[in-house]
Amino acid sequence: MFEKYVKLLREHSMKVTPQRLDILKYLDEHRVHPTVEMIYMELKKNNPSLSKTTVYNNVETLEKHGIIQSLTISGNELRYDFRNDMHCHFICKRCGRIFDIDIVCPNIGKVEQSGFKIEEVHGYFKGICRDCLKKEEMENGS
Amino acid sequence: MFEKYVKLLREHSMKVTPQRLDILKYLDEHRVHPTVEMIYMELKKNNPSLSKTTVYNNVETLEKHGIIQSLTISGNELRYDFRNDMHCHFICKRCGRIFDIDIVCPNIGKVEQSGFKIEEVHGYFKGICRDCLKKEEMENGS
DNA sequence: TTTTAAATTGTAATTATTACAATTTGATAC
DNA sequence: GTATCAAATTGTAATAATTACAATTTAAAA
View 1 (cartoon, rainbow over the protein chains, first blue to last red):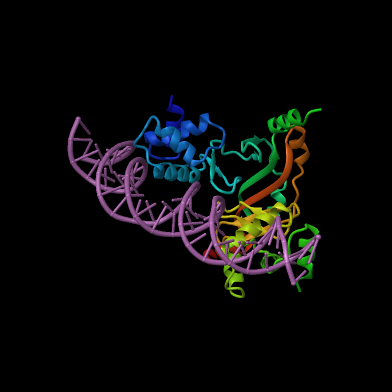
View 2 (cartoon, rainbow over the protein chains, first blue to last red):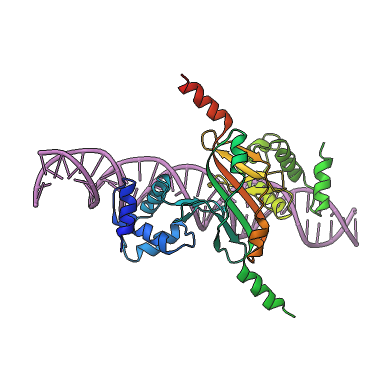
């Protein structure tokens, strides 16, 4: 059940706590790029003594260890992604959902050649998703 | 002095107000991707009655009209860019400065083919800038 | 010059995040 | 197993960015 996450934490020599396991499991099983609020509200159901500060602390340290990554795509809150590999994101301006886009930036070399040391790359697309486009068609539809 | 910005506003059929002209001029002449706070503090010097809400309102409507763009690169505040064309940004984790990177994403077509309607593209690189790297070398230097 | 919708202002409310002190707990050594 | 201790958790309070909103002022059209 939790072995996967225990292993992850041990590999990074992080203490294994039930809160951390819950957070990792939640992020792993909910790939919608949740906010701290979402994580907190959901996990509180099974652990009413959970503190929001704990969620903040843990997503921060998990990110520092490179286990998860944070997105600044929406502008008013951080969102977290269990995936830590390089990929892009698309946010729908209608429904607010965030989609993973599996493309990698081919320009990293070019930027590094101009003297910058790159540690993170984030690609954000904003627009209307398939479903919302389809819904729009239905409503306007001839 | 301000004709350029008057023209810009008129082209978008926006009312020409001294506050808007000040904000546009400031953004045009300070390409460091300022926050609302920075804009407000600076313009307040010559116009003490300026309200921060006015700055918020105006950067929002200027962005809606596509005259300027906002960046979510830093995560805890929005930053504004007089440039509205597609380009990328690099933020230095040491000094916090944000640099313009003139490359365009070659994958837009690919994403649109999968059914998304793209309206904005943001590329963010995070790492250490040339100057901070050089400073680091000096300090460690053999 | 009058009119009116839009812009500006100031204050208050909201939301996300951080700070911090007290308590608890996981992991190590015995 | 038990003692130890640094690290994690908790709860509350503070901060920072942004939004809401009502009253006043103003740009621009008639």
